[in-house]
Image (spheres, rainbow, N blue to C red):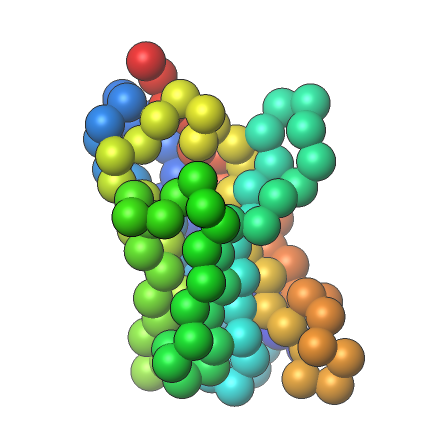
Length: 119
């Protein structure tokens, strides 16, 4: 079983930056693809970015392309989301999730970290 813990959220001004971390415990998740998702107040959870186990395949949702960067350090069992040029519409609770190697579904979720961007 993989436990995920996000950190690094907080308050930023528009145009500013934050770096989120997703640390795994319980066992290594170096073989698992990992994604970042977010949920804004009153809205459903939406996909933000994802990264394959080897970092060879990376995808971004269109609204964050060129502003957010996903990366991972498998030696540290951690995935990162560098968020630059933040906008008020980036305000949300951000979650990381790891894919199950058996099902291919995102089965392991963290508790989320709040990101608030002021204008």
